[in-house]
Amino acid sequence: MDPNSSLLSGPAQHPTEPCMEGGRSLSPREQSRCSPFAWSQVPGSSLSDPNCFGDEHIQAKRARVETIVRGMFLSPTPLGPGRAHAGDGLSCPEKAWGRKRKQSLPAQQGPLEPGPAGKRGGGRKGGPRVRGQLHLLRQQVRHLRERVLRAVEPRAAAQGPATADQRHGPGPGPWGVDSDHHHCPGSVGDLSRLETHRASEVQYLPEGPRFLPSEARALLESLKKELTGAISQAVDSVLQKVLVDPSGRLTQLGGRLQGPVPDGRSEPSPPEGGAHKDPLPLAALPRRAQPPAGAPLGSLSLAKSLDPPRYPISPRMIPKPYQAPPADCPLVVAPAHIQEEQILGQLLGHGPGGRWRGGLPQDPSARSQPSSEVALRPWGAARLRPLASGQQQCPWPFTSTCLERLALVPPFSLTLGQIQEGLNPGHLKKAKLMFFFTRYPSSNLLKAYFPDVQFNRCITSQMIKWFSNFREFYYIQMEKFARQAISDGVTNPKMLVVLRDSELFRALNMHYNKGNDFEVPDCFLEIASLTLQEFFRAVSTGKDADPSWKKPIYKIISKLDSDIPEIFKSSSYPQELFRN
DNA sequence: TTAGATCCTG
DNA sequence: CAGGATCTAA
Image (cartoon, rainbow, N blue to C red; front, side, top):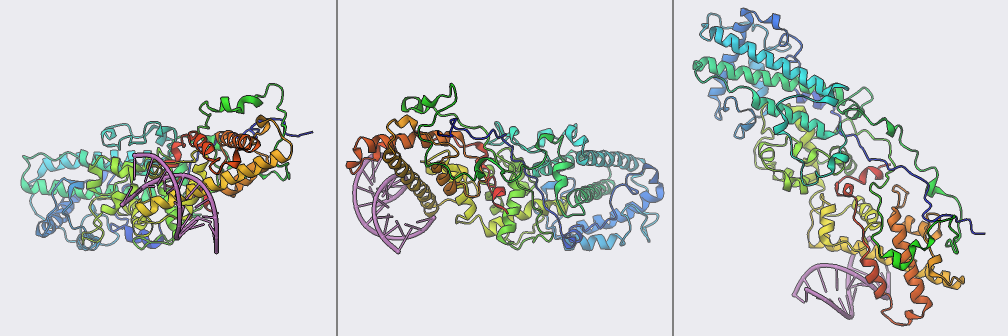
């Protein structure tokens, strides 16, 4: 008897939200380079200790600040005071910063420590007012630090910072409708939110009373600058601790930055122990498949098939262990392909709801723009960056250098290495998986689902050609198995149902889903069954005598395209599957 | 004329 | 899977 006892009898498999963890580690060299402030300003030392502020400290600080202020005023491109992220014109070479820092900061000495030769008697013109400002700023620093730490703390992050930064948060984005469903907390999006949060805080710092004496105001601004730097460094240090654990993995991003982790995901299901790895050498087709009692075998009849097929909402991915990127991640140099893909996946591979779309603090212009274009072409924004224009890559002087690189480098690399043109094997694989949902994708659809591809005529036709080839194989298989069924004596086309353990399915799966990374959606099985039946009817009724006998079948099938899951719009969605 | 689909070939 | 040829519809 035919062992096939159920239609569409895939083993019950639980859709798994692909939830990749992102981020990347910093090489030691990078870390050291990233932190021009060294560790002297890490809050938690004198900065956060209210008791450490004596007059001596203030005076020493003033002396230091005055030095800085003079240096700023002597600078050819003076920094607009109090406009942290608006300093577009600011040439912010790290060297210059480093010089200034060295000039004013003895190594290993905190900026708020008394300078060795502080200018005494510089006057107390600021007086109590300045002290009040200092106090205020100190409090803000504490708050900021607490909030940063809270955001990084495992539990507290679930609640998130409470206050005023929402209005600065990135909008939902064009895919944001149901994107929250896919959003993986703890992704780079959170990181970017953290950064955005900080940006908003920088803006939030009071502009400073205009009535202050100019010197005091300069002092105030300088202090703001210092404090912001300290915050930056605090974020750096915290994030570095979070991002790079001793094993070099970035797991903490998912574990700490995010809210409660759905424990349900437990461990990655082993690479498919059952399901499709079936060793059975199955009959060619589940001929005369007898469904279990009540199983609607007839549901695959032509009439029924005209109903919109049911599509799985969330195609199951077989999660693979996250692979940590190499420790020494190149900065501007375009890394190797693998690294690029890893970075791509890590930074952007968070599903259509990933927060990367508008969230990364790339540059002021990018931040200030609504991110629709950016969202549709994530790298487009990066390409607009003045990489070769001679402008320094430090549009935001107060940004944590490390964090900024963390966010910026991958787009750079991709811009230089990958985005230009050309399709890679990952794109091909993705296209094959998409074939399970759509056999006749329009070029617009392809553009929508390959946001990391710079489409041109050639690329478009190549991808169209891919699907043409997919169809070719598909129809060939259908015809082949239909004819085989006929020769095997099948008379009722409704008996022809493509099951997951049928030979036809295995052939198709081998072609489009080699490696079994993906659970073939049921809708594809229905379409396949229908196609098979159509071929069966045509051949069995002798229509194949007509040279164009396949065209009606093509027409039918072309109307049965399904919606592709939104997650496919992520430029990195399937790529996690392909590593290893 | 062009884009897209199919067929054929390698 | 790509390239070329052919056909068709816009």
